[in-house]
Every structure is written in C-alpha cells, then in structure tokens.
Amino acid sequence: MFTGIVEEIGHINSVNNDSISVSCKKILEDINIGDSIAVNGVCLTVTSFDNSSFNADVSYETMRVTKLGDLQVNDSVNLERAMLATSRFGGHIVSGHIDCVGKILNINKNGNFYELNISIPDGNAQYIIKKGSITVDGISLTIYDLTNNSVKIAVIPHTFENTNLKTLKANSFVNIEFDILGKYVEKKLLMNDNKSNITENFLKENGFI
Image 1: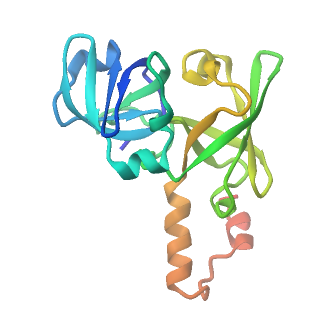
Image 2: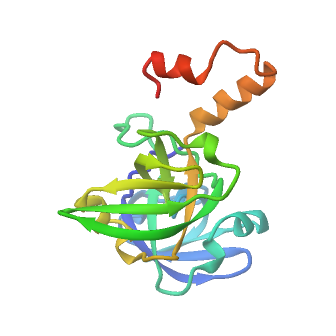
C-alpha cells in the first residue's frame, strides 16, 4: 500500500517488453529484493538493484493498462516506497493498481499554484467527486472541479516542482488510480441490486460529498 506522497524523482534507464530499470538515490537507502515500489503510481516488485538503480519485472497486462510502455530513456518518474505501519499517512490509500490512462488537457499557472485539467476515459465518472482524492502518476491529489469526463486539480508549488508534473504538458498521458473506497461502495450497491439506503443524497447529508 502507498500514500501518493512522492519521495523522489527517478529516471528511466531502460524499458523492455517485460522489465524496467530506474536510476534513483533515496529509494535505494533501504531497498531489498521483493520490495514494492510505485513507479508513476504503478506498483512494481524489485527483482535486482545496485548502488544507482533498481530493476523490476512488468507484466503484459501492466504494460497494456498503464503508460509504462511509452516511457523513454531519461524520462522522469515519480517513486514511492510501500508505506510502513509506523509512517504518517500523508496522502490517501493508494494500491498502485492503475484504473486507466488520462490525458492532460492543459496546465495553467494561477499565481503560485498550478491547475491541471485532465481528461478521464468514458465509464469512470462514478469514481470522481468534488473534493475527492485521485492519484495522478502516483501523486495523491484532490479534485476541485469536474465534468463527466474531466477533472480539475489545484497543485501547490512544492508538489509541482518535486514530481514529474513539471515535465508534463498538454496531451501528455498520465496513470490514473481512483479512490479505492469509492470502488467498494459501488460494489456494495451493486451486490444489493441498488436496494441499499446509501444514496447520493445520503452521502451529501452525512458529509461524505
């Protein structure tokens, strides 16, 4: 499990059909084979490492549903080690399992802050709510506005400058993971054949939306 708080920007050494190599520093401080590392929000397992990089296997399915396969040598990637039970929970619950790939529509600077407008593929509107959490390339962010197929996110300067967001531009693709709590709520509603007392009005009245 991860929190969406990026620890370091790494750089791609190589990407093959079934593996990836990433150069980094901080992530290597206590790394072990078998550790889980989020690379642009994708949970990968360390298979080998040295004093300057680590390697991880990447399945066909992961390549298919994420943008890892589009990465090029020297591209910047967001890195986060799996959360420790004793750590502060700075972001939100992030599984590292990508739901879809979104597209940056535009990035605008508003004073010292940045506004991201991201297109979300059809069929995912039920997972996005105002003030809700979303993970973009492994970064825990908060939605401040939305339509059925896009979200707007305000990003503080620290996050923008210390993640790969500063390398993105209009038409860049990003890995998206929706808040896992919303998925469990959806499943519960479907299992109850929509006969549950949990409705959108109920959630609003009780401060969930």
